[in-house]
Length: 70
Image (cartoon, rainbow, N blue to C red):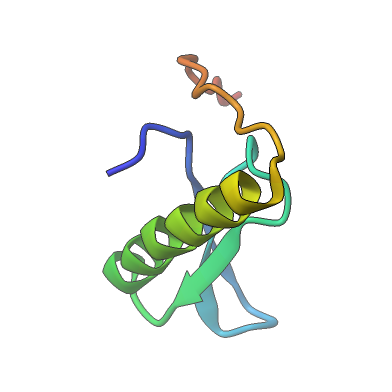
């Protein structure tokens, strides 16, 4: 399990839940349920990190912060 912030929302255009990891550019996944989207984004994070390591790219350290909603 990774400790990156995950943003999840419903997309009417995709008719699916979408999960994104803001600290990992382009790391996005979807699923028909929130649970599926979470499972898929965890897999996508692993692939993102593995690809970055193989390419010699830096991997961001997870930030610990909270989102605020108004």
